[in-house]
Image 1 (cartoon, one colour):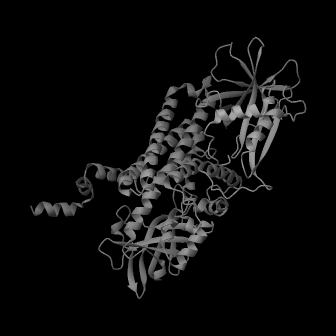
Image 2: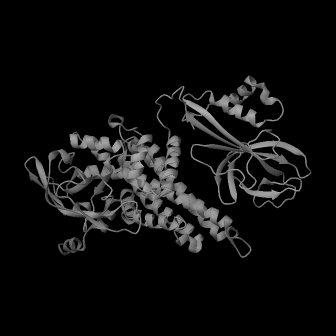
Length: 564
């Protein structure tokens, strides 16, 4: 929670706590004593104060003064970002012998079931049904945690007695040093901001995310420290994109510098001002590459640049480009003015640059951003807008999209993983023909299959990120392209399975599974289509001749055959 490294010897640390505070060994661990334990641990965490909220059952033997939860609502068992929720329950044998008090950490909650981390066996997934029961000896209901599927009558009885909610809040008396955030802290910050934006109906707004996320450094995470960023590597960013994708695939656009990353290398004042605004959350960059007849084959683009003094005149059109209505800037690609045939150039332009006209089209998914294109006719662009050199756009494109595809795959993986969690909750809770539909094992099979495939894709993504971070781009490329294809496709299957498991509900706006399916269908095309990504994997492994075979035009083939 504080972003500090784990203690290297936690058991010795715990033993020392018992030595320093022998009262911990004296009888029951009361609520007050348990809170004191948290305070002793937090003494080593600089820059934070501890906040612990405690609520108990009315019959709890561990407090005399409360506060107690209401009989009508019971305790709040909703896990929240940045909060540690500890549940304490009394363990009683069927014969009435009280064994003692046990503590677990709340991980997740469904409609009737919770998942917890049991310190006794932390790698095992523990689940409980939460039940309220009338008590013949009292006027209030008592709360019990029952293991699902338990058939034995000799199982211990778990009665919930206390809920502890623990937070670390920045200290006013001893401010924290400017230590960088960890990946886990950034995930928590994303959780908190997502909760706020969801309440406001702005979850998929990239501009809101960037503006408000700037307070936690979100827009500059993967930008150099020299421009105000955090200089996170690809391996770190991979986890953040994955986490953002769990909420909504539109959040693939709110993390890091995104399509503004190529502008960091520019020296002009125009670029430096744009990058500064990007880090501050005030700028948002679109990219315009695709044309009506130039998608995967970027060398076929018809948009052109012509030299005009020190600057350029750009003429052409772009189509099927996202973000243009939300963007403040756009990275625009054209054929180069003076480069070799097929060479491209890249320009950084404000979205309201004179002569740049936005054309609207409408997409089925990824609706957090607009969809459309650009038109420009002999539009003058000064030399300060050129990224790199004239004709150097191809290399800029390849380096940028190698990174971008990897991050898009991570967001897709997170999107699919969350859908499977929703599906698991659904088949557990939905009852048909006298029982939960989870008893139909054909509904469990796709969860296991697709979860494993998504984990495999994430493992491969981490390997690719390590290669990228050490500058081995040639080795990373086939892995990235394969992950972009299979990660997105597996996530799409996972979301489709989850949607169908919900029946008519899954096709409604009561759940977001239909949105996830549509968004992933868009991503299987955007940033490198699945089919082409697979072909590049074949090319790298089995030879360039197969790529040429698939890419060579029929006319070219016929001409070569005739000359034999």
